[in-house]
Length: 561
Image (cartoon, rainbow, N blue to C red; front, side, top):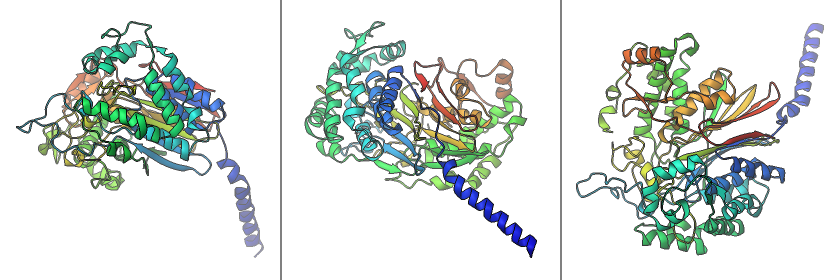
């Protein structure tokens, strides 16, 4: 009996030690804060708010607003997005769905002609392309529910930037050239974002006093400062005068939705990512579940990339058929992210041959950029935010309602205007993502957390339809032990089911790899320019370091303080 009693005492002692030390382990906090955004002024705005006593959620409000000012090519008050949050004190995780909603007057065939064909550009340029924005409501929600500073404090950096102005960079000028015609279609858009009706010269100072006034209204009244009162009236009057269909009821009925994130696992990593109406988390976990069945490190580069491409193909096929706004259609997210479902998808992958997309089940029924922004934040308490926001195409619809300074999105193009018809990014969709009044369009935005016993990663990127595959490649890199500078700098490739081609950046595949992939049956298509603008943060608990990296393709800034 004595050995039993001794063993029992040992177990009790171990249990007591765990009880004593567990809270200390859970309470471990980062040695520094880190912010990575697509623009140095937005990164500085976030750190300014942290220094003023704000937390990561306050910083997220400041960064969201600052990016609306200094990066109008990718996001703004006239757009929407997804804010993935982790609150350290209770490990609460949630996705703030600030995605835009279709106007109540929208109808299924709004962008079709009398013959049922899609009218070119109607869902891309001008106010009819604009859905009801969610970003202002998301900022107010973040401040009220999760921050500790008032909007008057967190919006101050953005208001200052809008009034005093900033020098536009080469990225801005390149996008202004690309969307010059759309901006010229809106007198206010041209006045604000062009110079003498053309691309601004290098060093041009962009001032946005009307946008500063709109931000001040939000600072005073919260979401009501945008969705009600003088700003709302100007938005509606401007949109309707230019042929749009917004109403007072559209703005009054906009609501933020808190959603449970998509979760998954890959080789010791816990994945937390955006849930529908974003397709990002579902597609990311589906691809990782497929690839978990392979030891990718054992394959040569061409075979490894072939398997990754085949996983991409199948996840994007499911995206086209099943995914949409969960408040309007039934989205089988649990099925699509289950490992057993991935087992079935993997069983149909041949290691020696590509599968033509038209041969996949459901394929026969479909006929088939730097347009968004992302930031990642970690504060010294361990709170974290991964946020991806968009106005869809660069400069959104190009339309600005007079007196507001608000550049409107063209997110209506993210709906399926017609089953099987591709949108501006070549993505196809079916009835699950059909246009309906008050519905949120499907998105590819993929703000993501990766976590294991050694650390936490916060990442995401813009890039339209290629967002999810960029996050996939970064996740695989992180799982191999690489650091953020590697994730954001990786050469990228992408397959989205239809068109049945492998898009890739220049220099992604050497000649031998390209030849091997072609022999396997893949059609390679090199894109003209590098794509994406990933922003990433890593808290390495094992080493005690905090690292951050901003994509070398962009002009962003990652800073640890």
